Amino acid sequence: MYESDNPIDQLVHLYVDGAFNRRELVKRVMQRTGSLAAAMGALAGYEEMKAAEPTAEEEKARAAVRVPRDAFDIEANDMEFTGPASTLYGHLAKPNEWDGKTGVLVVHENRGLVEHIKDVTRRAARGGFLALGVDLLSRQGGVQNFTEPTQQTQAYGRTNQTDRRADLLAGFELLKSMGATKIGMTGFCAGGGNTWDFAVNVPELAAAVPFYGAVPAIADLPKINAPVLAMYAERDRGLTTNLFPVAAEMIRLQKAFGMNIYEGAGHAFHNDTGAAYNGQAADDAWSRTMLWFDKFLRA
Image 1 (cartoon, rainbow, N blue to C red):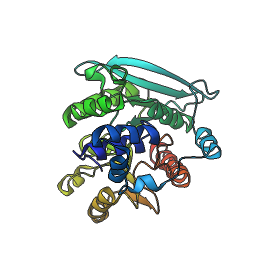
Image 2 (cartoon, rainbow, N blue to C red; image 1 turned 90 degrees about the vertical axis):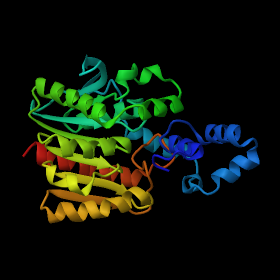
Image 3 (cartoon, one colour; image 1 turned 90 degrees about the horizontal axis):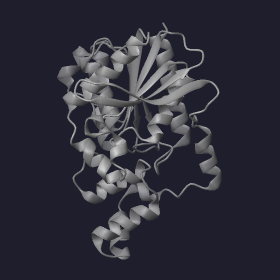
């Protein structure tokens, strides 16, 4: 499903990422297949469709992990700052009791800086880090310029790795200008791939935690200085299988490296707005992420 040209794959990916609910997914697939029966047939082979819709109790549990904008222990705001080619849009969250030294960049999935990733940015601030989410759709006017999920993914598809890295580097420099001397990065799906890329290309990065992102080429791994903790899912077989040779080479190169592969979890298991959310895996992965940053940013 990842980076597929199949329009049904793309719709299921959006559903998994929380862009819309199952009813809307079926409706959109019907528009492509012509009937409800054809739509259900087209969706039948997707593992993601086997999960039941969350109950009211499960929705309550999902809501409990979120950090509201007006949380008592942080200050969080949308903001703008200067980028290499345009104004960049971001979400900055600062803990009330920040140590004045540590920062974390949070990198979104392939839809831009949506509310879910802003929430994850606030979670990083709750962990004690000055946290910034950067909207990689900024050069196209920002995610606010694309109100429809498919438009957001299309806009992301028009970005390129060089520009994304440059805009994230501007965010990195912003955190430095605010006093952060040790900065880590975490990202999800496409953001996981961008996190790997940043670790390869920015020697100053102090720690990295990519979630189910595309891995770099083996030849690029010697360039990585940052300790990397990779978070992947057992059922996300394509991406997870690609991780194994990278893990072996990171260990051979004696890089600081760890990985967790969550049994029974699928792609986007950390996204509490989506169909693939796995609360147990997500809670464990986030706790380990904060411990990784605590170890390598505060050491």
